[in-house]
Image (cartoon, chains in turn green, orange):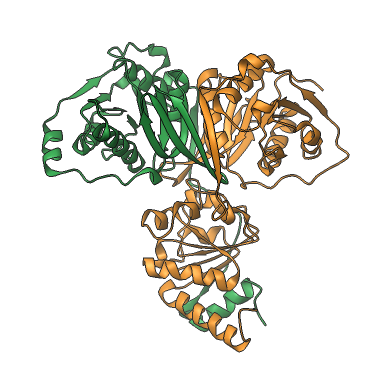
Length: 239
Length: 339
């Protein structure tokens, strides 16, 4: 499974991907190894340890100055290069999007760049005998789909309730070795990494400005009843 | 008219009917095409859609390219991506826009990855830089607290998605003329690795919040789950539906389907009532095209008041119960719910 982001804490939507991976491992009849893969600064190791504490077996952090400033395309490319160090694998699980209003586009881009089938908006998932069956929550209802593994699956929070790590899990995660790989270690084309490999550029950041000018009505000064009158007028509900 | 370096929008259909997001996209694309002095084209895939393609012309397109085949009736990422990618490589549009529906959010990143170009999700503003003639893509960033403007300087097409309902369609103009092109389909390209086994229609939720004329939305300023729950009663009394800020959803006060904003749904009701919502850019991105915004917040400096037509500074702990009491009293007077 993959997570991304720069926070030291794991992105809450990615917890659902981790939980699902661990559940699949626990219910499988044969041994399954779950790897958590992330791109980020060195402190992102703590997020990987959270996933290990929940039951992932192995953590890999893609970290290096050459990755800095990556947009979604360069991030997806870097993650795919990291995935290639772990071949073969059957299933790649991603959170739907980062919680801070991120784009939700890295998972689908990973599928495209690795030429794997893609399932997005997955609210229910089963894997049996090399076939993944899923419910996709889309406009107006639920689409039921299936495909052969390997596949990339982007999951919704409705999929499961992530477990809390056990104390033993936390201790093991704390002691685990996390592989830290740079661009060279994942055999990346350096022209496709970081800011230099990103098709997009942020050219301006600003605080938003607005047009509407509003005179405020104060309930404290005018009284609650008058404020309610004001609301009724605003809603066109005066009798 | 020339098709070189046009502005493209990816229309959508459901069950053979052109979906309204297509008309919204044409409104976004029209001003960009006019600023660049190029054609606006709509690409639409489906089955039995060509007959309605004239509607897309009337709503702003100069040219409609129809990908029509029984196998294209429902969106499948493999087939749609393969066909649209082929069209993009053939015609090299300058700009490609789609709606941030589950289709747009799935298809656009796949296209951008394969075309090796930039994609900006959930833009709240799109314009053309008059000097460089590049697409300026504005979206909330860094937790939704600021607006970032993004460019794709040298990769093509410049790709962006916009929220459904974030912009109104242009007025229909039946006198507009344009070209409808039936794109020949190579059946060898129609295979998909993912099979659709079935579809279960959801009759309960759907997009009710996006269709409502009155949205009563609550945020952290309501302070308790109980008081948020009172919004459902308020909404019923007023004939509206309940919306929620991301905070309220993260606190577990409302399901995600009610979330308004960049990370939820965009709405443009006749009236939007924001109760205890501070108004982060994330939230404003989802409701600022409402006709009329009424905000109640205890903080007179809350950003929500800057987009509100009517602002009331009040503590919701007092205001909401008093409002409900008054509505109940009015109902009693009038002998029922017929307010």
